[in-house]
Image 1: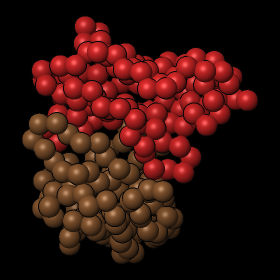
Image 2: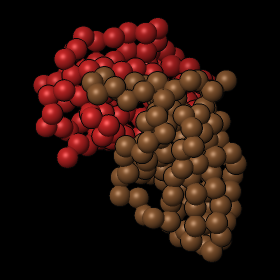
Image 3: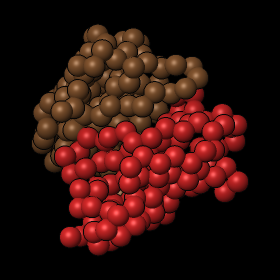
Length: 116
Length: 112
């Protein structure tokens, strides 16, 4: 059973709605990540948090707002999304962000988001 | 810029066949790490292997084996005697200094 959980598993929202995706890891890891997985496109890294501090923001539109209140929880707040934002949003965690060797990541099952 | 190419979008084999998934990468760095992940229908990616750029030794783990060749910038993955449970999308990834690039993935279908 995965140590990373995501809720909700499915979400349908209108372009004017505000919603949040939640991720929780039970592995004692220090780093957490948000990815976007669109059909037939490579997995896109959106945000990286290490010890609750954002260390990476890959030119993600401001309509996506991450929050990491502690090392076990990660949120992705959504507002005024576009239909092209429909995708599978994956959360992952890893033991840390070593400057040298990157750790393997542990992924959650994802939230399937549909923007109508 | 770093880039990962998985040219095979979909592969279909019959159970017990061997299958190789290709991964070609581009980077200007001399230190980097390569990963393979499996994404079953349930959605979560599962870590399979990590290699660093200084270790070209091939690795075998049960029915899985990996062939890392820096000369051709490739990190190919072979499944021997495939099984239905191997059906999934497989991703190759290149990581360096928190810059993570995934390939588009190869969907493998193993038919009974």
